[in-house]
Length: 268
Image (cartoon, rainbow, N blue to C red; front, side):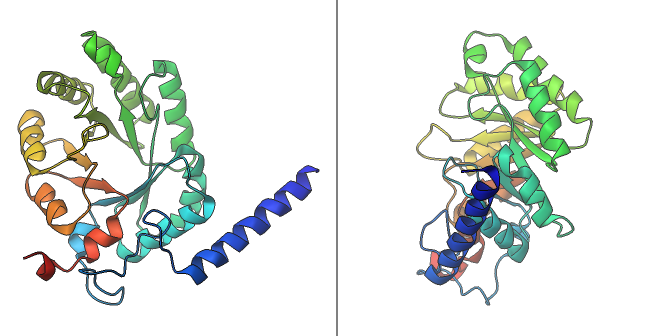
């Protein structure tokens, strides 16, 4: 099969999949985040616009498809989310769909384990910025933390911050399930001193997810001048609101639509 045939086949498959999604009405929690269940308002009803502006509509998953990216971008425009957070391979596509809408493109470098070399992290950073990303998550190398090599951690963050040259917000990532409290504090201090714009508090390996207590704790660690992103296990309006009220700046979630459209009255 020649390249032209492959391109045509891919285009046809994408069009067919888009049509299936429209007809099916989206039932999967990732492929269709607009819920119609109990406690969820109709899409024509009111929703929390203030909270929506703090939501990072996240879909950095291996099974993401172009059709799913289109859907997430459309949802982000519709509800006014802060950004759409996608794998690096979809940054250009998302940028073309979101340009001029007020919704940013976010991605991650050295994802998910942060074990790339400093030079590789810088190269990825430069590429995703060229492709349209203006917010970047940077996972920390857990092994170097465990080895006490905090100078290396700081150098990695500083190199990415320098490469971004203020063209993108850099969010250093802490995994609560992988680090002790003392290690979390040290990494947060490294991130702040290296010039990171945000600390992303993630519950990648912690089953209970990120909560309001975590936000209060890290707000006390980094002070008021640094952004705090909560990511992991936040799936309802009540939890999301508590996280923001406790010091969080933004929330990364795949259930963003459900979160902002959930009627608070049903949670009382």
